[in-house]
Structure formats: structure tokens, C-alpha cells
Length: 94
Image (cartoon, rainbow, N blue to C red):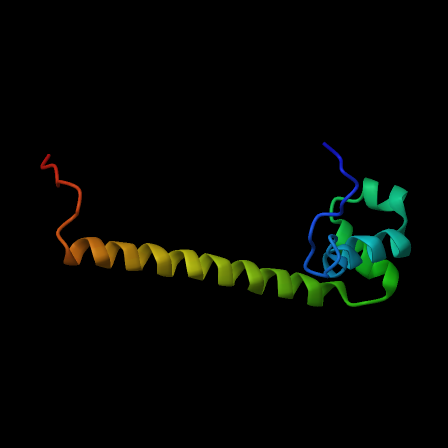
């Protein structure tokens, strides 16, 4: 089935270089052995590079907080929609 023709492309590379720069730079800075032994490879790589690891931890905490707030907003919106359209589950009396 291979007729020698290349499939049409959009002109962009198939790999995502920005997504590969983080892991590649961590491997270059800290080395594969140290990253493999580490419980927190990103913090290990940042410590080796001389960058403040607490800044990365605060950034990660803020990112996870943003994701949790988005989840909470989605659940609240769903509950509001269901209450406006009377699609609540039946209430059981005990």
C-alpha cells in the first residue's frame, strides 16, 4: 500500500519541542541517575541548576489550586442548572 507519496502535512513538525524542553533540560542538568533516584525530579533539577525550588513549588500549588477551583465552579454550575430545571435526584426521607 506504500506508493511512495508523503501524506499531506500542515508544515508544522510532528513533535512538540516546547513540551520536550523541560524533561530534556532536567536530564542535562541533573543527569538520568540522579533523576531516577529522586522522589521529586523537577525540584532536583531546579536545585542542580541553581534556581529557587520553592518558587516552582508555589507555582505548582497555585496551578493545582486553579484546577480545583475550576472543578468546583463546574460542579456548582451543574448543580445550579439542575436546580433550575428540577432535575434533582429524589430526596429520601429517613
